[in-house]
Length: 102
Figure 1 (cartoon, rainbow, N blue to C red):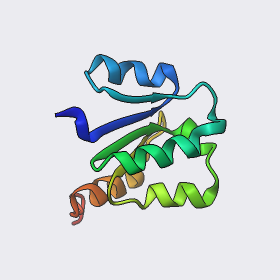
Figure 2: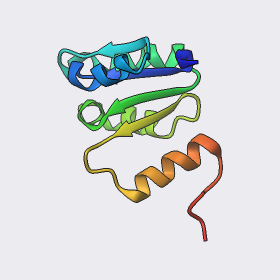
Figure 3: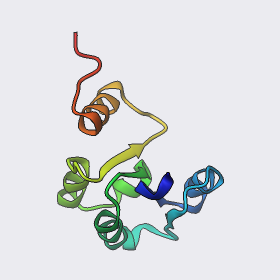
Figure 4: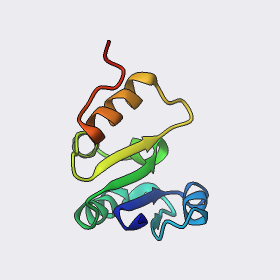
């Protein structure tokens, strides 16, 4: 069930996902190799890639744009300060429908 879910981030971030049983977890010691790790995960995952804002903030703007607009896999960026609009866009990309549309 969790084969289509990958996680990339700090060891602290990844711990909770490991406890949930997600096996495809990449822990980053520092963020210098984040782009190479993301490239590998994007090629191997067809479902969802979960990461944290701290990891994504260290990426180049072009690469960040690439993962934020990716359809397969869908990249979900978790943040302590999640915005409603950001969450809305992720849901729309993931399922193809704007659930909050009036």
